[in-house]
Image (tube, rainbow, N blue to C red):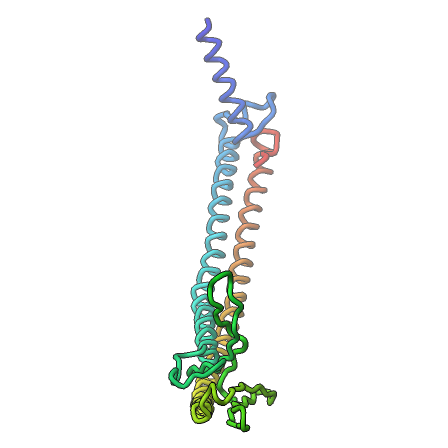
Length: 268
Protein backbone atom coordinates (compact mmCIF):
# COMPACT_ATOMS: atom_id res chain seq x y z
CA UNK A 1 0.00 0.00 0.00
CA UNK A 2 2.82 2.34 0.92
CA UNK A 3 4.58 1.54 -2.34
CA UNK A 4 1.42 2.34 -4.28
CA UNK A 5 1.08 5.69 -2.52
CA UNK A 6 4.70 6.55 -3.29
CA UNK A 7 4.20 5.51 -6.91
CA UNK A 8 1.10 7.67 -7.20
CA UNK A 9 2.90 10.65 -5.67
CA UNK A 10 5.83 10.25 -8.05
CA UNK A 11 3.49 9.95 -11.02
CA UNK A 12 1.61 13.04 -9.91
CA UNK A 13 4.86 14.99 -9.50
CA UNK A 14 5.94 13.90 -12.98
CA UNK A 15 2.67 14.99 -14.54
CA UNK A 16 2.62 18.31 -12.72
CA UNK A 17 6.29 18.92 -13.52
CA UNK A 18 5.78 18.20 -17.20
CA UNK A 19 2.75 20.42 -17.25
CA UNK A 20 4.65 23.33 -15.64
CA UNK A 21 7.88 22.96 -17.60
CA UNK A 22 6.81 21.90 -21.02
CA UNK A 23 3.11 21.85 -21.81
CA UNK A 24 0.90 23.94 -19.53
CA UNK A 25 -2.80 23.18 -19.56
CA UNK A 26 -5.75 23.28 -17.23
CA UNK A 27 -6.82 20.14 -15.34
CA UNK A 28 -10.07 19.92 -17.25
CA UNK A 29 -8.11 19.64 -20.54
CA UNK A 30 -5.16 17.44 -19.55
CA UNK A 31 -6.28 15.03 -22.22
CA UNK A 32 -4.99 17.56 -24.76
CA UNK A 33 -1.62 17.73 -23.04
CA UNK A 34 -0.83 14.07 -23.43
CA UNK A 35 -3.61 12.92 -25.72
CA UNK A 36 -2.97 10.98 -28.92
CA UNK A 37 -4.97 13.32 -31.19
CA UNK A 38 -3.16 14.45 -34.33
CA UNK A 39 -4.10 18.09 -33.80
CA UNK A 40 -2.82 18.17 -30.20
CA UNK A 41 0.25 16.16 -31.11
CA UNK A 42 1.10 18.61 -33.90
CA UNK A 43 0.69 21.55 -31.50
CA UNK A 44 3.04 19.89 -29.00
CA UNK A 45 5.60 19.17 -31.70
CA UNK A 46 5.36 22.70 -33.10
CA UNK A 47 5.86 24.18 -29.62
CA UNK A 48 8.86 21.95 -28.94
CA UNK A 49 10.40 22.72 -32.35
CA UNK A 50 9.84 26.46 -31.91
CA UNK A 51 11.57 26.37 -28.52
CA UNK A 52 14.50 24.48 -29.99
CA UNK A 53 14.73 26.81 -32.99
CA UNK A 54 14.60 29.87 -30.76
CA UNK A 55 17.43 28.59 -28.56
CA UNK A 56 19.49 27.67 -31.64
CA UNK A 57 18.79 31.00 -33.34
CA UNK A 58 19.82 32.92 -30.24
CA UNK A 59 23.03 30.93 -29.91
CA UNK A 60 23.87 31.48 -33.57
CA UNK A 61 23.05 35.19 -33.37
CA UNK A 62 25.18 35.67 -30.26
CA UNK A 63 28.02 33.73 -31.90
CA UNK A 64 27.92 35.92 -35.03
CA UNK A 65 28.15 39.09 -32.93
CA UNK A 66 31.01 37.64 -30.86
CA UNK A 67 32.84 36.60 -34.04
CA UNK A 68 32.44 40.08 -35.51
CA UNK A 69 33.83 41.69 -32.37
CA UNK A 70 36.69 39.19 -32.26
CA UNK A 71 37.64 39.92 -35.88
CA UNK A 72 37.68 43.64 -35.14
CA UNK A 73 39.80 43.12 -32.02
CA UNK A 74 42.28 40.96 -33.97
CA UNK A 75 42.85 43.90 -36.32
CA UNK A 76 42.67 46.81 -33.88
CA UNK A 77 44.61 45.44 -30.91
CA UNK A 78 47.91 44.88 -32.81
CA UNK A 79 47.65 48.44 -34.13
CA UNK A 80 47.08 49.78 -30.62
CA UNK A 81 50.10 47.81 -29.40
CA UNK A 82 52.18 49.18 -32.29
CA UNK A 83 51.23 52.75 -31.35
CA UNK A 84 52.27 52.17 -27.72
CA UNK A 85 55.58 50.66 -28.82
CA UNK A 86 56.30 53.58 -31.14
CA UNK A 87 55.40 56.15 -28.50
CA UNK A 88 57.65 54.40 -25.98
CA UNK A 89 60.52 54.35 -28.49
CA UNK A 90 60.02 58.05 -29.18
CA UNK A 91 60.11 58.90 -25.48
CA UNK A 92 63.35 56.97 -25.09
CA UNK A 93 64.87 58.90 -27.98
CA UNK A 94 63.91 62.26 -26.49
CA UNK A 95 64.89 61.33 -22.92
CA UNK A 96 68.34 59.73 -23.11
CA UNK A 97 69.08 60.19 -19.42
CA UNK A 98 72.49 61.19 -18.10
CA UNK A 99 74.53 58.73 -20.08
CA UNK A 100 78.04 57.71 -19.08
CA UNK A 101 80.44 59.88 -17.10
CA UNK A 102 82.68 62.14 -19.26
CA UNK A 103 86.26 63.07 -18.31
CA UNK A 104 85.80 62.18 -14.67
CA UNK A 105 89.41 63.21 -14.01
CA UNK A 106 88.41 66.81 -14.82
CA UNK A 107 85.51 66.99 -12.38
CA UNK A 108 85.94 69.73 -9.80
CA UNK A 109 83.96 70.94 -6.84
CA UNK A 110 80.25 70.72 -7.33
CA UNK A 111 80.27 69.87 -11.07
CA UNK A 112 79.88 66.42 -12.60
CA UNK A 113 79.83 65.97 -16.37
CA UNK A 114 77.97 63.18 -18.21
CA UNK A 115 77.24 62.44 -21.87
CA UNK A 116 73.88 64.18 -21.76
CA UNK A 117 73.76 66.10 -18.48
CA UNK A 118 75.66 68.50 -16.27
CA UNK A 119 75.05 67.92 -12.58
CA UNK A 120 75.45 70.47 -9.79
CA UNK A 121 75.93 68.67 -6.48
CA UNK A 122 75.69 69.87 -2.90
CA UNK A 123 77.04 68.67 0.39
CA UNK A 124 74.72 66.82 2.72
CA UNK A 125 75.09 67.35 6.46
CA UNK A 126 76.73 64.55 8.39
CA UNK A 127 74.43 62.05 10.08
CA UNK A 128 75.68 61.16 13.53
CA UNK A 129 79.36 60.30 13.45
CA UNK A 130 79.40 59.53 9.71
CA UNK A 131 80.80 61.89 7.13
CA UNK A 132 78.42 63.93 5.07
CA UNK A 133 77.77 62.87 1.47
CA UNK A 134 76.68 64.65 -1.68
CA UNK A 135 73.30 64.99 -3.35
CA UNK A 136 72.07 66.36 -6.66
CA UNK A 137 71.27 70.03 -6.42
CA UNK A 138 70.39 70.54 -10.11
CA UNK A 139 70.66 68.40 -13.21
CA UNK A 140 70.75 70.17 -16.56
CA UNK A 141 70.45 68.54 -19.99
CA UNK A 142 73.48 69.45 -22.08
CA UNK A 143 71.65 70.10 -25.35
CA UNK A 144 71.53 73.86 -25.93
CA UNK A 145 73.55 74.62 -22.80
CA UNK A 146 76.62 76.93 -22.91
CA UNK A 147 79.60 77.06 -20.55
CA UNK A 148 82.20 79.84 -20.31
CA UNK A 149 85.29 80.30 -18.15
CA UNK A 150 86.06 83.46 -16.19
CA UNK A 151 88.48 84.32 -13.41
CA UNK A 152 89.59 87.02 -10.99
CA UNK A 153 92.71 87.24 -8.84
CA UNK A 154 91.05 85.09 -6.15
CA UNK A 155 88.46 82.93 -7.88
CA UNK A 156 87.74 81.09 -11.12
CA UNK A 157 84.23 80.67 -12.48
CA UNK A 158 82.42 78.35 -14.84
CA UNK A 159 79.35 80.24 -15.96
CA UNK A 160 76.48 78.09 -17.25
CA UNK A 161 73.69 79.47 -19.41
CA UNK A 162 70.64 77.23 -19.37
CA UNK A 163 68.37 76.52 -22.35
CA UNK A 164 65.93 79.21 -21.11
CA UNK A 165 68.87 81.71 -21.00
CA UNK A 166 68.96 81.83 -17.21
CA UNK A 167 72.40 81.48 -15.62
CA UNK A 168 74.23 79.72 -12.84
CA UNK A 169 77.91 79.79 -11.93
CA UNK A 170 80.23 77.34 -10.19
CA UNK A 171 82.82 79.16 -8.09
CA UNK A 172 86.34 77.82 -7.43
CA UNK A 173 88.69 79.47 -4.95
CA UNK A 174 92.16 79.81 -6.48
CA UNK A 175 94.76 78.26 -4.28
CA UNK A 176 92.43 75.36 -3.61
CA UNK A 177 91.66 74.78 -7.29
CA UNK A 178 94.02 75.22 -10.21
CA UNK A 179 92.86 77.82 -12.71
CA UNK A 180 93.99 75.72 -15.67
CA UNK A 181 92.00 72.74 -14.38
CA UNK A 182 88.87 74.89 -14.02
CA UNK A 183 89.33 76.13 -17.58
CA UNK A 184 89.78 72.54 -18.80
CA UNK A 185 86.49 71.51 -17.15
CA UNK A 186 84.69 74.49 -18.72
CA UNK A 187 86.08 73.49 -22.11
CA UNK A 188 85.01 69.87 -21.61
CA UNK A 189 81.50 70.99 -20.69
CA UNK A 190 81.33 73.20 -23.79
CA UNK A 191 82.57 70.46 -26.13
CA UNK A 192 80.24 67.85 -24.66
CA UNK A 193 77.31 70.27 -24.94
CA UNK A 194 78.09 70.68 -28.65
CA UNK A 195 78.16 66.89 -29.08
CA UNK A 196 74.93 66.50 -27.14
CA UNK A 197 73.21 69.19 -29.21
CA UNK A 198 74.09 67.24 -32.37
CA UNK A 199 73.05 64.01 -30.67
CA UNK A 200 69.66 65.46 -29.70
CA UNK A 201 69.16 66.96 -33.14
CA UNK A 202 69.64 63.53 -34.69
CA UNK A 203 67.34 62.02 -32.09
CA UNK A 204 64.72 64.68 -32.84
CA UNK A 205 64.78 63.80 -36.54
CA UNK A 206 64.23 60.15 -35.67
CA UNK A 207 61.56 61.07 -33.13
CA UNK A 208 59.75 63.14 -35.77
CA UNK A 209 59.83 60.14 -38.14
CA UNK A 210 58.35 57.98 -35.37
CA UNK A 211 55.69 60.60 -34.71
CA UNK A 212 54.72 60.48 -38.38
CA UNK A 213 54.53 56.69 -38.18
CA UNK A 214 52.40 56.93 -35.05
CA UNK A 215 50.03 59.25 -36.89
CA UNK A 216 49.81 56.82 -39.82
CA UNK A 217 49.17 53.80 -37.57
CA UNK A 218 46.58 55.70 -35.53
CA UNK A 219 44.78 56.65 -38.73
CA UNK A 220 44.84 52.99 -39.80
CA UNK A 221 43.53 51.98 -36.38
CA UNK A 222 40.74 54.57 -36.50
CA UNK A 223 39.74 53.34 -39.96
CA UNK A 224 39.77 49.73 -38.74
CA UNK A 225 37.67 50.68 -35.72
CA UNK A 226 35.15 52.43 -37.96
CA UNK A 227 34.92 49.40 -40.26
CA UNK A 228 34.64 47.24 -37.16
CA UNK A 229 31.79 49.30 -35.74
CA UNK A 230 29.98 48.96 -39.07
CA UNK A 231 30.57 45.21 -39.15
CA UNK A 232 29.49 44.70 -35.54
CA UNK A 233 26.42 46.89 -36.08
CA UNK A 234 25.46 44.85 -39.15
CA UNK A 235 26.01 41.58 -37.28
CA UNK A 236 23.98 42.87 -34.34
CA UNK A 237 21.16 43.97 -36.65
CA UNK A 238 21.11 40.54 -38.32
CA UNK A 239 21.22 38.86 -34.94
CA UNK A 240 18.34 40.96 -33.64
CA UNK A 241 16.31 40.06 -36.75
CA UNK A 242 17.05 36.36 -36.28
CA UNK A 243 16.10 36.53 -32.61
CA UNK A 244 12.88 38.36 -33.51
CA UNK A 245 11.98 35.74 -36.13
CA UNK A 246 12.65 32.95 -33.66
CA UNK A 247 10.60 34.76 -31.00
CA UNK A 248 7.76 35.24 -33.50
CA UNK A 249 7.76 31.54 -34.37
CA UNK A 250 7.64 30.67 -30.69
CA UNK A 251 4.81 33.13 -30.08
CA UNK A 252 2.87 31.55 -32.93
CA UNK A 253 3.52 28.07 -31.52
CA UNK A 254 2.36 29.21 -28.09
CA UNK A 255 -0.81 30.69 -29.55
CA UNK A 256 -1.43 27.48 -31.47
CA UNK A 257 -0.89 25.45 -28.33
CA UNK A 258 -3.18 27.72 -26.34
CA UNK A 259 -5.99 27.46 -28.90
CA UNK A 260 -5.58 23.79 -29.84
CA UNK A 261 -3.53 21.99 -27.26
CA UNK A 262 -3.80 22.83 -23.62
CA UNK A 263 -5.84 25.88 -22.81
CA UNK A 264 -3.08 27.85 -21.11
CA UNK A 265 -0.36 29.85 -22.84
CA UNK A 266 3.09 28.34 -22.13
CA UNK A 267 5.19 30.56 -19.89
CA UNK A 268 8.40 29.90 -21.79
